[in-house]
Image (tube, rainbow, N blue to C red; front, side):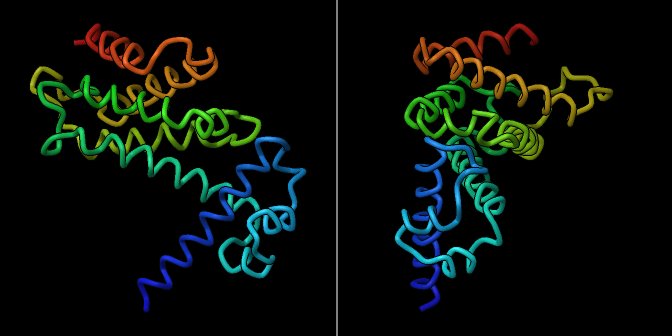
Length: 190
C-alpha cells in the first residue's frame, strides 16, 4: 500500500511539474497562476497545495529533480569512487553529460534560461562540486595545499559554463565534440 501511495504521489507531482513546464515555455513564472497549473495537470488546487506550499516550492522541486537526473546520469561513470587516472571528468563521463543534455534539449533550454529558472545554474554548480568532492580523490601529484573545495567548484563551474555556452550557441556542434573539447581543456591543467 505504501509503495502504491508513493507512486501516486510521484505521478501527481510529475503531472504538476510537466504542466508548469509547459506553461513556463510560453509565459513568465510571475504570470502563471496555480489555477492554470492545476487545470492543465487536471488536478485541483487542494491537490497542488498537498504537495507544494507555493509556486516557488514547485520551481525548486523542478530544479532539484533536474539536478538529480543529471547527477544520476553521470555518477555511474565514476568507478570505485574515482575517475581512472584522473581527478577530472573522464571522456566517458563527459560524453554522458553532453549526450544527456542533447537528448533533453528543451528542458535544458528552459533550465538554463536565467529569467525562468534563475537559481538553476548555481544549484547545478554546487551539486557538481559536491559530487566531485564526494566521488573524486586527489592523486599524488596535487599538493596538500590545494583547496579541494575550491578546485572542485572551479571544475564544476567550467562544466556549467561550457553547457551554458553550448545552449546559447544553439547546439551548433554535437555532444561528442563538446565532450572532446571538455577533456582537451582539462588536460591543459595536468
